[in-house]
Length: 321
Image (cartoon, rainbow, N blue to C red; front, side, top):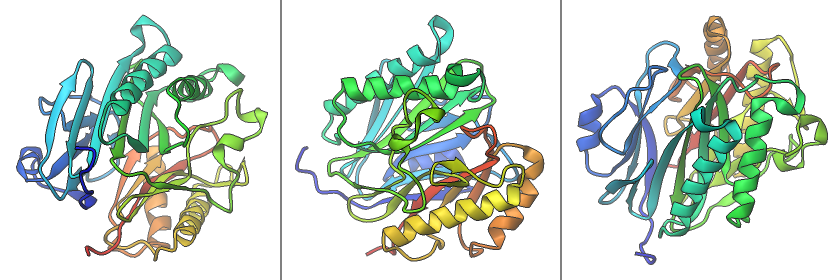
């Protein structure tokens, strides 16, 4: 299995029924979005605790090959064509955000080390009340510290691309899911921004542990959560339209760094909006920057800094070869 050649990997949004997508050959993972947190029997189907703003298609990951899937306790996985999806949900009822985070990452990274798809490329983290707590007691800062401890304990030598967003679903529920592969990617940084792991002390005792983007093996770019940050400072406080403009400028800088063309129909984006009332303004601002063919979904999500109102992550794939 170690020698499996990577097949193509794609992400797309669909309006088809969930079961129809799961029944398609090559479906690696499927995501629906609702704070109700329903549970699916198929390990590939994850209900993400984010409320939709407007119409909400399903997000589908697919590969060019046969897919197998299963569960190991509280961790779910699927693999095929050299790619792997992993997900775990941790509950803070027996501790706090730090213990939940360390449990989730310890389980995920232990599974990863025993997998043929051992190269961690991209991670998503969704936790409730992300901005609660003052100073270093803020939940996001505590999450960052716990994540860094777990990564160090497992000998991770390169940070993956990542997103960390607050949800308003079940209290104390942490969701972590990830993409890995048999071949490694290439981490990219944004020339407009300080690398997250080099943030100064003012942002917490442990700097965030993620790369700004990841060039995927076999092509394509996985883009981390991107907001109106220049250098290490937030910009355009209180102006959601200007924050969208700045976030898009950062996205475009990553495309230039990766020598990729502008976003198109093969570039699905997720847009997290702190205040639902800003959804129309965010959509209008995006329409001024992106071609109408660019797939995008809007979710209500709390950004890791209280002054930030919007964050965007997503993908840039090339034309099928």
